[in-house]
Amino acid sequence: MKILSIESSCDESAVAIFDSGIGILESLIHSQIDLHALYGGVVPDLASSEHLKKLPALIAQIAKSENFKNIDEIAVTSGPGLPNCLAIGVSAASALAATLKKPLFGVNHLRGHAYSPFISVHAESPENFRENFKSLLPHLGLTVSGGNTMLFEINEDETLRVIAETIDDAAGEALDKGAKLLDMPYPGAPMLEKTAGQTPPDKTIFPYGQNRKIEDDPDFSFSGLKTSLRYYLQKISQEEIELRKPEICASYQFAVVEQLRRRTEFFAKRKNYASIGLSGGVSNNSLLADTFAKMASRMRAKFLIADKSMRGDNAAMIAFASWISPQSRQPAANNTLKIAPSWELK
Image 1 (cartoon, helix red, strand yellow):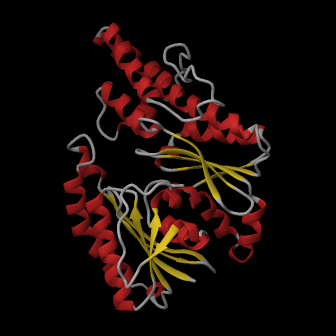
Image 2 (cartoon, one colour):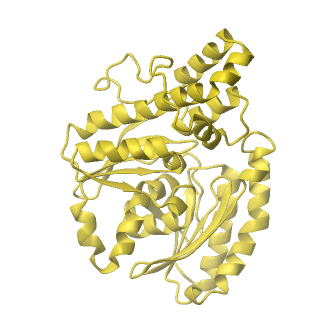
Image 3 (tube, one colour):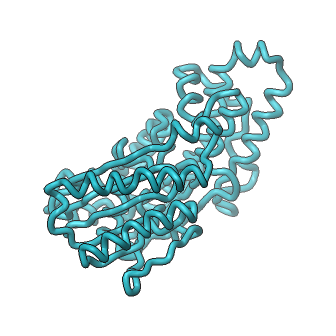
């Protein structure tokens, strides 16, 4: 099965080709980060305009590849995401499907992230993947990105169930907004991590767990953490902020990561998971990745993390999710596919 896929849900234009018997054959990504950094965050109209410019060029580029031959299906992110951005990707995919006379499927973007840690497992042994995949179930996964924080499990029958999600800010938003309060440019999370460096955190400064019991209310919440940083900065001088910035960054970052760890580990202890996974752009954070690797070791579960090229938004994970999980996609009707901007993981 060879799948051509397109991703345009937010600020990355991407095209990929996946072959179930080989792996990822092509993966092209154009990031808009530098453009949106000028405005301190993603501007939807600019994002859609950039997709209109870049997506056709990426498709033209991949069409010149030998791998473009004998495509079996077209997969495209149809939700969730920014409506205008999704519409551009879906329109491009619909045109390709009509031209190539191939089936068209809309894929859930969040499921793309959820299954992305398994792409490297497939690459190691495509011929034995189904057997290896089964051996890694049940799987406990955490997807963390700029707009999403979701804890889920993939059961032994391969069904996916959401366990917890954020009720306000996502972990990535909390890091970016915290960095903004510290006068760091967008996207702030990488700068916050760099500033923290190896500085030991003060674990008493910021709250890293809600007062409510996890068993009663498992969802994540980061808006209070952001507020606590704002109040903390208001209490000290600008000179002290600059002097102690590495410690403040390290302590704030620890609070975000610790909440993710505590709530994930709570559920990891309640069931014998064969693997624990981490995906999404925020999984690039070294403290988060190291913390989850150690947690998985304590749980005697295999730790899976998406390859760096698959952690941000990309089309390869869309093709992979379309192949590995029929529940992740919806077929087009008469080559017409509706966008679903609020399509949930579950």
